[in-house]
Length: 346
Image 1 (cartoon, rainbow, N blue to C red):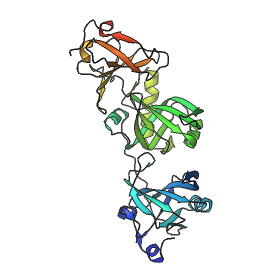
Image 2: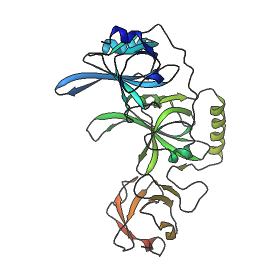
Image 3: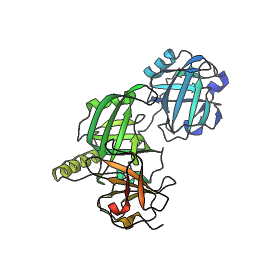
Image 4: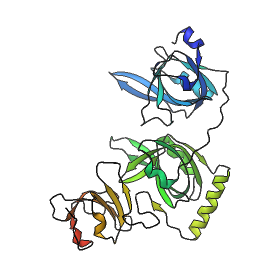
């Protein structure tokens, strides 16, 4: 348990520094996760997390112990809690849904403590700083963003098998905005349950979505995000009217990684990795392939393949993997002449 002195010294979340907490912090409990069990050195333990919020900042808190049910109930039934005796460390971006680069790790079996607090801080709701979908390609991977979009396609929750052999539910939606671009949003586990209440045309306000990359496209991981449906504000009304008109006029929404709506020559490039990648639709001029290492070709009907230039100078592409389709031949090879009659300048 935390010392009496430590519990009497108060601090704001924004004032915490890396290392042992030398003060108690009081805040609102948000985004409370369920308890999970784990094994370490043949010893069973439990962990859960939540986001602590005060009027200065927010921070993820991970709670560890052998039996956490009573502690979890305190967090679940209290508007505010006071924590002390934890370690402040650099956050793990895989799990952190806040914009705070630090998080608290708190062991209630050691020096950590969590108590119900009657000092409920007054916290002004953080205004969303929405990023346009077309601008997501300029955001670094693993960063959190706020997005506002209309649901254009919806895949209800379904059970899938992970590579680790675990069965888990997942829901996917595609959202669009006035930039005429679309992005896929994925909700794993219990976060997928909310999708049963959604419909095409609904407006989602997603806070702290994580920018990720899958199959050569920018996607959003929303498992730890805060999602609001059809909230009552001007931006939602404006987007609803725009989406209704866009569907009536058969507007096409280009997915991130596909050619820009303006039809710019060369499509949209992705400079994140060591290889340069370009996404195009057929037909294309092979002159556009100059200085490109990887090419994604869209054959229509949802069939897209990734090709990498063969380094031998044979003016051929070799399929290195299937990105979007299981219908294509993973070992196929085709020459540049099949597309334009010219070869890449070596």
